[in-house]
Length: 370
Image 1 (cartoon, helix red, strand yellow):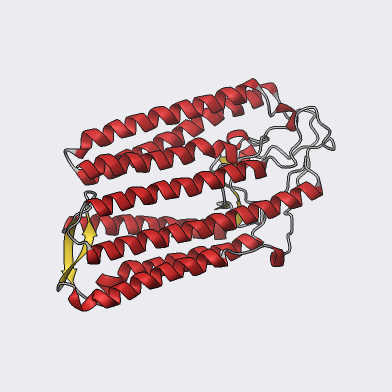
Image 2 (tube, helix red, strand yellow):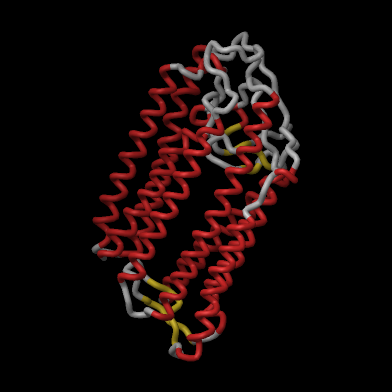
């Protein structure tokens, strides 16, 4: 129970920090993912909407923490899953409520009336000059290799029944026969995750980045390069942290099978490390997104990016049958999302949902057999 009261609030702090910093990831002409002209980016309703969003997220976090404390004495598993799920849903609702304030005012006051707009295509950046996190990739594989070497060294001394699942208290609650899969399975998953993240860094080199009509071509290209570099660094650091987490938990399960606090403290330290990585990235990204976007009243060529909010359902899902692109930049957050107006985008989206549902179902079934 004590571990639950430490780990779950810590995880909620990490998630809340990300949710609170998300608005800063968008250009000032896309507050909460809403298209606004350059001259309207400082409207009072935008500041009010951002304050309401942060307030609602803060309230949702407090309710989730209280719920986690209340449920910890009843069911540690419920105390870990329900509050986090509730918080994510509540934060998403807060985003929709807050952004709707801007959408409604923009529509009522006709912000785009008589505003000349221009749609700018992707900025093409030479992939040769966009680095991939090879150093982080090598360091991650080295960590996993060291953990594997330790596992090989202690394999013969491990009991015939090895732990394959741990509760939130850091104590093993399910065991299975000793074999290569049960002993080294997490490390194999770690290698796969590392390879996937490294592959994504190559996608990052060529993925389209739409330019802002109000910025110059030079500023757009610089921003595109900076975005690619920032994402590459994030992918590299995340693969290293994931490799470190899996390596630590694997080695701890072999060498400290009955120790509770080393696992708990290690888990908290890893959550803090993840938070630091994310905050460092978000601070860097905030400087990037505003680069080249003029301030209200400044000269910007007399054109703005178009009002395409109608294609973004709730500001999250992109549905545009006339857009040939399968993947587009997110309106709120970092990375890309599927064009659900494109048949291929729908197919990929359905496949991703199926994978997530499968993983959740497998987890529930596995815990049911424990």
